Length: 92
Image 1 (spheres, rainbow, N blue to C red):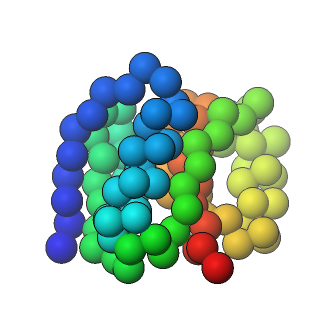
Image 2: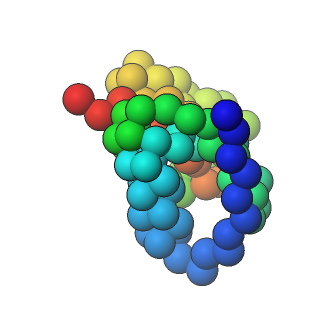
Image 3: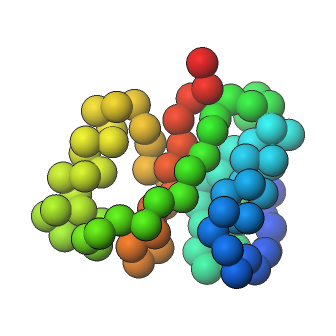
């Protein structure tokens, strides 16, 4: 089952806390666009989420290299929004 929610945050740390609270309830973020968040059912606490502001656009060569590096570290890119990158990693 998928869950769509609309939220507005002034501070990315509050947004990150909310996304991780949703993950703790078993809702895993799979897409985001401005104020819309799309979650899918999963195991509670399966993923930990982080929001990162990268130096270069994720579409640039430097940005893609950084995202590839994260992928090698088993960190999954959920979505990007301008220079903001939504990341998740399975919790051990």
